[in-house]
Length: 68
Image 1: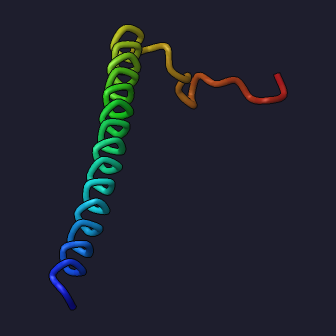
Image 2: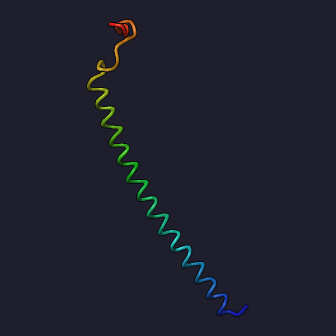
Image 3: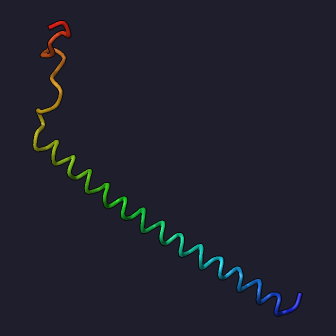
C-alpha cells in the first residue's frame, strides 16, 4: 500500500467521523430541546396539582353507585 493510498483512506475515515460527529451533535440538540420541553410540561402539571389538590377523584366511600 502506497503512502497516497494510506493518506486517502485516512482522509475518508476522517470525513466519515466528521459527518458522524455532526449527526450526533444534531441528535443531542434535538434531545436537549425535547428534555427542556418535557421539564416545562412537568412543571406546569406540578403547578396544577399544587393549585388544586382536592380536585381529584372522589374517595370510594363518597362515590355514588352506578345505578343512581
